[in-house]
Amino acid sequence: MSRSHGGGDRKITVLDVFVNVYILSAQIQPYLWTYNNRLTIHLGYNEAYYTQVEARKYGELIQSILLRELGVE
Image 1 (tube, rainbow, N blue to C red):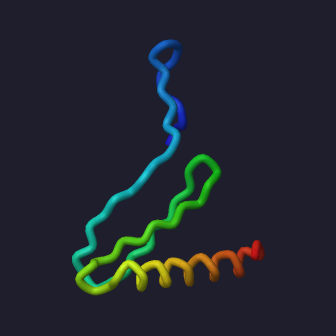
Image 2: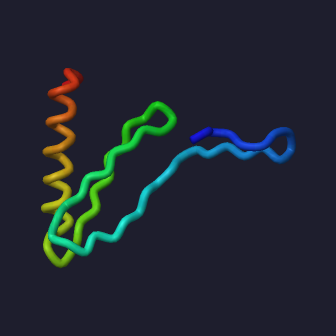
């Protein structure tokens, strides 16, 4: 995705992007993407199955594994 579109007085610049999903199953689904030289990890989960604390712990586990495997801890 290009960061800037148009030109002159009609130019717009996209500063950030976000993905929103609705999870209906009992899975925690991680979504990863890069934009503007930044890696973003977003978790989708169903609140009927997991609390925010449980989902956050899962996200922290993913983050720690990525940092360790990429050698940036």
